[in-house]
Length: 580
Image 1 (cartoon, one colour):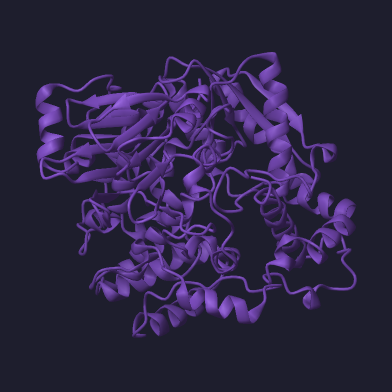
Image 2: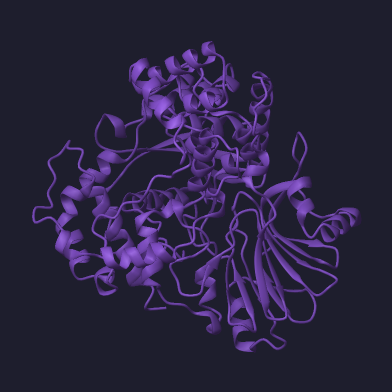
């Protein structure tokens, strides 16, 4: 099953037949929405009466959630009358909606999770909206090239950038936004905001969210699982992927787990993954990362308008392809975003929130002890830092980016012109822990598109579902550290539903050992790519800053290898675009 795809062109009375034929040859079928609207979609369309269409997966706001295959006339009329706002209130899912209003406006609406991409460009007379830049190239009028300033800003801090992409004139419609088009004029506004779900003065009903959290999470995962017949779940045995495994067990899908194995103790998580698969009786494949799957010069995820691909992810993609030869894969499920959604916070921020909220001394002391247990710092240092932060005027300052190896002059211009993400501008009265949580959720929505939507399995991160986001946003920061363990609220919610060893696990594995292995074996190739590559030609990479000795001592904590591998992957993305 392919992922939801679409191309829409507004303001064009007669669309070139050659472009239309090319779109249909790529599996996109025309759908009529009236004069001046040309829309092609995959087989994921739900009509909104005569007013528009929803493309993607849609579920009811109920427990249990039910997948929506068609709307009643009352539901369609309500969507039309509310200019799409009722979509966010009555439903959830992964979708983009196109709604034609009576006054001639066209609205394009993206769900808050951002599960279905929305990229757009206008030439003043026409508006082009697409799900994927690979499909954009089928329409000759909207081909774009790389914007060096936007790319530099992205390489500085991907998580802080808003609607600007790294391609000239191409913008992203962010999750929860709507794009209005009428007679050559367009504008973007928010139809959903995380700040609407954050309580300024959190209530004291500590147990309420625990009761609802587990059933909401499991319901969302189950609903997504029911949409596919053959799923591969990336399972590390960590909290987040284990929760997804628990939810998929309640679905009708046939799923198997994949545990990737890298060098070193941190790279081998078979023990923790085995606790989950053994408890639930799940099928699992243990696959080693392979160096031969990695080529720093090969473009990866080049269908996206930013360089989000990483070198080690090439190894995961190659493993998926080998598994697909054994049995076709409809969807790849992950626990991606769980750390952010479940507010994994290792700082004094929860104590700062309580100080600002004028909490009782007993609550302050208990939270300080919790933070000490999580971070290893002593309580008095924690109090000192929290008090210093609590009364600073700029409580909501966000961390900066990584300027290493970037041309400082170009980066300065880029940051002057960069547009921050609207979620990073908190309303008055918001506690800093809320700001940090929303920033984490924003960060979680980057880089989940693993394959071109036309021919790869669907990438699904069910923990980013709208009902889960909204519920987690209501939980104050100190509840996430309660008991001296991170993501405490969700651990308590799944008490008795996950193995005790999974809930108590504090260690975190990952591909770090494999990334170090890549660097040790391919550092000279990485150097060659960067010295004479696309980033250098665009004036983004500052080769003078490249160290003469690229070989890092194994076991050292230098950030240079990871940074250079990230830049090499970005360079390969750059190289892929001129040929289109």
